[in-house]
Amino acid sequence: MEPFHLRRTISRPLTADRGFTLVELLVVLAIMLTITSIALTSQSSFNKTLILANTAYDIGLTLRSAESFGLGSRATTLGAANAGYGIHISAGSNNSFILFADTSPAGSPGSLNCSSKSSVGAPNCGPGDGVYTASDVSTPSIPSYTLNNGVIISDFCAYNGSWVCAHSYGSTLSALDIVFARPNPTPTITANGQTYTNACIIVSSLQAGTIPHYVSVSPSGEISSGQLSASITSCP
Image (tube, rainbow, N blue to C red; front, side, top):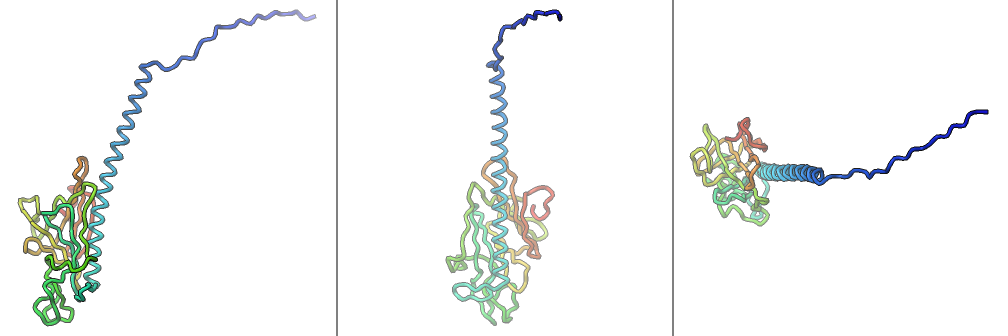
């Protein structure tokens, strides 16, 4: 017969699980608030940068449209043929620019009022002088663009051996016109009555913490945009 062993189970007193102390809860809340604040700040900065990039891209697309209209001899509603197309920027209106058909002064084959892109008397001699006037906007289909979301044209510059700008380089350009007219793809860049080879448009946000963006036009008609930095040579 096997021996019988009596085992006694010793029960231990139940203890409640330990919860968060007030200090631990405050630390967790502080960490959560810090992470949320960083995320919101980063998102806001990203949104402002994206808005600036989109605005610069839109200006570049408008220039590309002007180039397409001008080199393609798009007819105006008044029937003007071979008119150049371009954009006009004024220092007095930093939140807008105008896409226009360069129809003034009027031109016709054999006349003296020909675009600077055409030889006098040539069959493709068209109207315009490469400079915006109020009479150039002859139809509602040629729009004025307004910048939104606190974005402005903070500066615009032209180059011909050296840079001159509206608000920097010690110069005070009052307006900038960039016009494309057939048959030459080279743009006509005019500012304060002088002609230039290159142009640069700079857009900035009225809100702090953003880097300006640029749109540049080269002598060959190349249009580019991006974030302004010291490595950019197409803008001052």
